[in-house]
Length: 347
Ligand SMILES: Cc1cc2nc3c(=O)[nH]c(=O)nc-3n(C[C@H](O)[C@H](O)[C@H](O)COP(=O)(O)OP(=O)(O)OC[C@H]3O[C@@H](n4cnc5c(N)ncnc54)[C@H](O)[C@@H]3O)c2cc1C
Picture 1 (cartoon, rainbow, N blue to C red):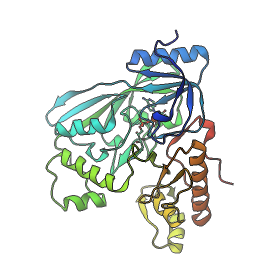
Picture 2: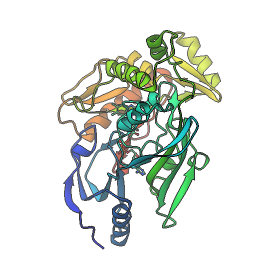
Picture 3: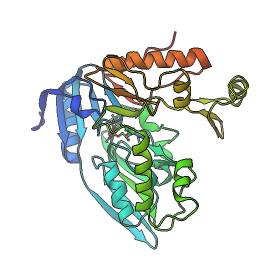
Picture 4: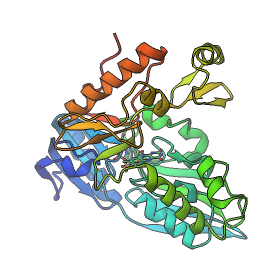
């Protein structure tokens, strides 16, 4: 059945924080699970491709979308399984992530305060296993409920099922399959703080924070110093993932570039993509429409009416430069819609 709230030829510019112009053939804003499932069923009957969108802070629209854009606006949050110091926070997919962090912190529960000010929705948080300042969503994640479009039924997926990795999860590998409806996080009033990250440890100078809200506020202050607010200057945060190289490649890079910034992992070495881009001279670059932020080389920004094609053209030049100089290939973090428009593989 045709959804009652279907909009035809809907502009998408306001549904992505990069604010590139595009339109959807159809758009539905789902405010409950019934509306979301009905919209998916209708798209299937009509043979239309579907693009799920939350806050649009990790998506770039590069062209018109020929199918249904499903905007997840399901709201609701509550506590469950409260026992001793622990409780489970349940968030509907369309809940604003940052507000959920502040809500949990105000209740005295720890675990996600380092993830303050990450834009977007709770439902998208597992997709790339959001992370910042030494904490990832997977650290507190318990399970989620999703509509499995392949099986046509609601399923519960645990941490193990979600196959979380660095900015990675099952949902990136099966992008058409799951519509996340609700997530559950295990928080605690006595969990150890995670303050190892340089700027946060400097902030507290060895003193224990007074509350999770104090940590969230410190994170917000640190982030505001470095990252542009998408409401003022459209962007999608980190544009490239930090590349992971083998120990052998790292040793060879370090011989040539002793000052290169990197972090050891169990299975290789993570390089700082921002450092690589900065060293290639891109920080602060700006053309007529788009550019690279002057304080953070990892953030591409849309200065004035840049299109998705403008953003991708700049990204391609940066990726090719880094590859030529360091032999390391940067991968984009945000998704590109429609999916065929991404960066062309390097020559
Ligand atoms: C200024 C800025 C700073 C940022 N900082 C960080 C950071 O520190 N760490 C970090 O990890 N990320 C960061 N990001 C990226 C982004 O905020 C996160 O990836 C966020 O989780 C995206 O949420 P969203 O609702 O905007 O998702 P969208 O951009 O709308 O969607 C992202 C992906 O998730 C899918 N999706 C969305 N909702 C659902 C759902 N309900 N079910 C199934 N799939 C869904 C979409 O189809 C798409 O593939 C930043 C972005 C910006 C603009």
